[in-house]
Image 1 (tube, rainbow, N blue to C red):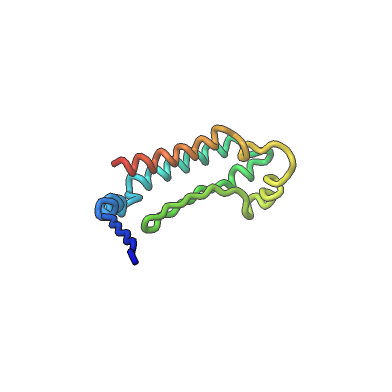
Image 2 (tube, rainbow, N blue to C red):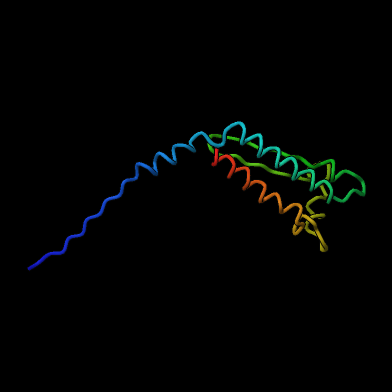
Length: 120
């Protein structure tokens, strides 16, 4: 009776070394670039917010966090200063936040910041 044997090996050393290059990310430069991109996106949202009373625009906030290898950012509107924000964003009609190319362009800007960090 004959037997068939198959043997394979994989050297993950080069891949491991390549991944180790990115352990320090996001670094301070990358966090600053991500925060700047978030702030620019906030400025675009300010252009779209209804300004009947000014409360909704004034309630806008930008926040970001960086912990270890994670960065996150958030743009929020509403709260006690503009409690009606939830109804404003859920009402019928056009909302530029949904489909405005200027705002969605920031998705690409965030990707560019990350690509730049990986290239350096």
